Length: 216
Image (cartoon, rainbow, N blue to C red; front, side):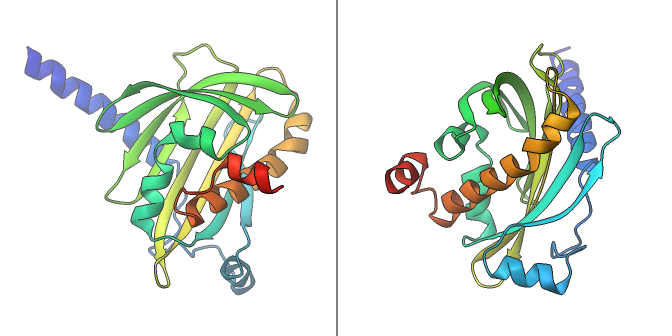
């Protein structure tokens, strides 16, 4: 009976993992798919490149995808970014991040964040593939939060000597904000957040919000 319950639980986790990763774009074996020569050069120069934006099935939101090169190897990049509760250290939009549950396949984190002129609370389920050096997240629909949709992913690829080419995707829709307001703020917010992520990873996690505020 106990074994059956354990196997059933494992099967459910595996199914949710498959569904999560199935939504991630195919970037090729080296992560460079859909990037042209000019975009790659911009990445090498330290810029963050927004490769393209496409609509999701829900009309209320779009998926924004980006690419960035971190000055750390993929394993180190994974170690720095997969603990989502640490986002309070380097993303000023995240006001609180609380671990609700954690196991060998998935974390559930509750975030209190600021978007545009509103503060909202939501829970996300993060699914990990450490061997493949990627993870993704989806809204925990069992929790009555402030999001209609929240999903995204990170994928990490070796690049050059001791660096990581990362591909990123993010979609969010809030219950109380019209789509035109979301569109006004979303891309600039993500660009600002990714710039902070790059600072954090490039410093091996040694630089955080408090350091940047002190130097601004």
